[in-house]
Image 1 (tube, helix red, strand yellow):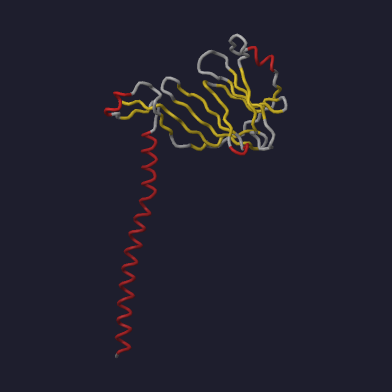
Image 2 (image 1 turned 180 degrees about the vertical axis):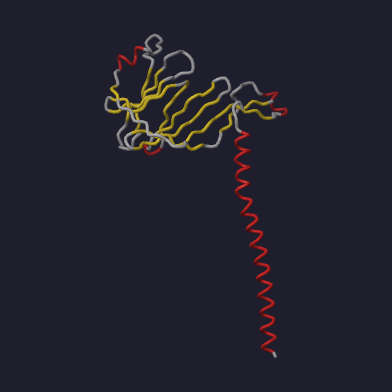
Length: 207
């Protein structure tokens, strides 16, 4: 009789644990089922919130704002879909290059820096050139062994060094009126440069 009683008590406990486990599992399952929906909603909210121009309720602080670019907001990085490797290899002719540049007095209209962008531990020449007086520079260029291996143009465009010579960051202004700019990350791949992500930056407008 004692043995049957122990078996009965064991079955009851086992059944109770089973019910509790089922309820916990059910709750976890319901929670997991809501995760994709929550992530989707979060992405939608992020997409809706970040835009240029970016406006917020400034409260009493807006009375103290004197400059349009006093505060900036940075959007999340967005990976480039189906990125393509940009390959370029054309001779750099300094005289021809300088013909179309904007110059003041002795200024030649361009300057250069040196750092590694293809990971070979040898510095390339990074050139910035201007074709007008405003929103300079307008040309961003990488020269290696006398050849242009990367070139881009835009407003206030600039090639920035990254750690270890693994490519570079390209900074450029998209819309000067609202302070919208963009950072693009390029890596060196298969003899060229491939964009992997971009990130937008906007001035904050206090309403």
